Length: 354
Image 1: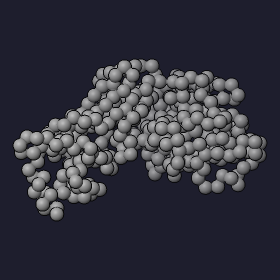
Image 2: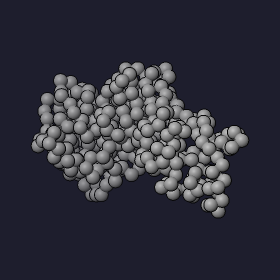
Image 3: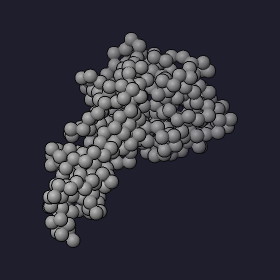
Image 4: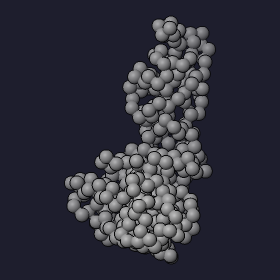
């Protein structure tokens, strides 16, 4: 069966056939402009630019051409497996292997790069404006259309980010590995009761996420936990408002991440904030060496304050019946601080993968 299929495919050649397979939109919370952003698929000749609404589309150029010159489109047989675009024909790839066997498959891009792409690893989408790259991330196997990305100057363009899509509201979040952990590289922006957008500004929500009261962030009953110890309900990983497969970190889990950062010679002991703060802090020199993108999103207490100068994230760890251990950074100190604040305050949630 395989040999007959291979003989049949030998009479076919790769020829151009236009068919869209990647689409997305670029948002601009920095108000720096959405039009004219270049989106390219690394390792191929595929590139495009965003329109006035920030929308973009990359099309495949793959078809099967018989010796008589008739082009048979195979766009309907394009799939993404392990981050690579694959071509299947009658249930098999172009080397005759059944779908899911990727070692001999040919990655679809342009005819000139098909052979070179055969052994390629995960594809990377590169976003740039002018000559400056501002974001790199992976092309996943689950989402290839309607990929919403944030255009702002707070991303580390040297980091290749992963991403997750929250099925509850369709929002997409950047993810990053630090040591053995995988973190969301941005604050959660899932709308729930007892959560707020800083001064009700939509661009602020896109950039800094929402601010949550602690019982709500942990998925607990607010009235029962706002002034009483709820430790018995906090055993194990607590998903809370995080997407499925993710959880609100404990104070000790944040410490693990901080220790990895401080072990880097470019950072050093008690200087984790210098390696984690992203661009956007007032008066601060920032590096964001790990792509964590810690931003000064402020808090609500019960009034909004500290946007641009302080950033906070909840942990699940209680300090008392009325207070929680929170991790925070300021614009003026190099250290990631720990403090206890009221459960009634609202700060950001940064989710950790289970």
